[in-house]
Image 1 (cartoon, rainbow, N blue to C red):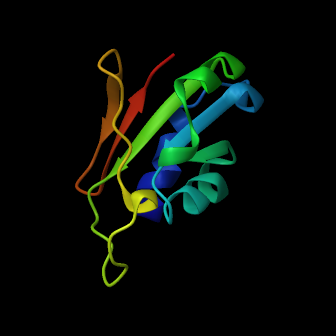
Image 2: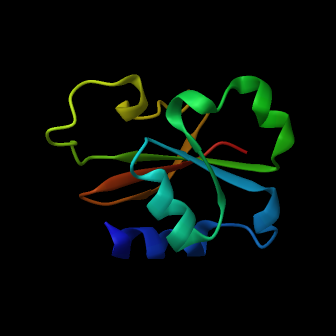
Length: 98
């Protein structure tokens, strides 16, 4: 997945400080490391938070966690209906919201 995350950087805007990527728990750390952006976990980013960022992205991983049990934090984010799929691979989909 790390090579896919590195590929995402070409889709990110120049004003990276006004950008956030929403991803499930366990993936968000890798997103922050590889993309050098602010991140939010699935349950920690609410619609009220949208006004704080000029650029919002959702990363949906196709990988399933193993031996982690069920947890709300492990749920994949659900991009809003007005999102645009801008990158897709065998391991993930990357959506732009704003």
